[in-house]
Image (cartoon, rainbow, N blue to C red; front, side, top):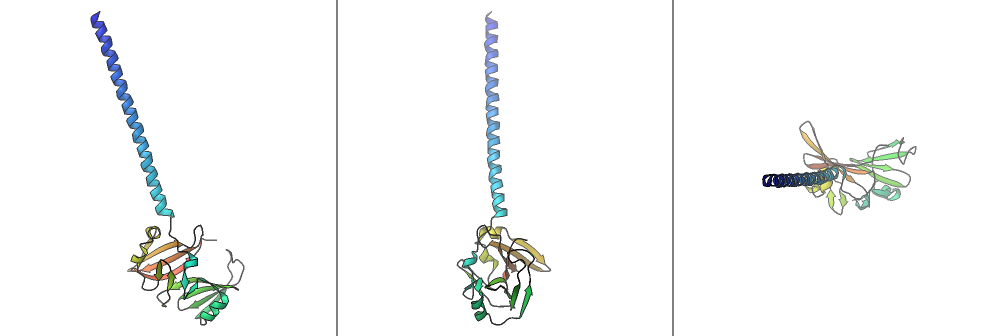
Length: 202
């Protein structure tokens, strides 16, 4: 009888010990799963940041020859009197669809002219000494890609490519929070060669 009682106690103790180990194991699995979810969430957040965020070069803070990039047409005519050529076209989409637009070319700088405004479209820094001034940076033919590294988000999203033996880097900026327009900077072998404005396709 005494042996039977001992056996019962031993079986009960064994069952209790196994149950505790199973519970500890389940708790450990749950904790590991929660940790994995948190890590994956952080990784996903970092990936999203890398792909989607650009710095802003506010278009209202950018100036060329002391004027904003969208200049009153009369002021424009007083300050840009000469041109290499003027081309006329009619956009088939976008906000100016169906309206006659003139493109003013002068030494690598291009403006779009309408009845009331002249909008800067492109600057080829290899053909002129123009400066584009912004409170955080001055852009000209002497601007190096090292100076752009402070715009961490845009620099992180840069696009690199080669043409023959030359290395090019293209860096995008927003013109305003929530706007589709972009400012594109193009660097050749580490130096700025071009700035142009772009929007999403129609």
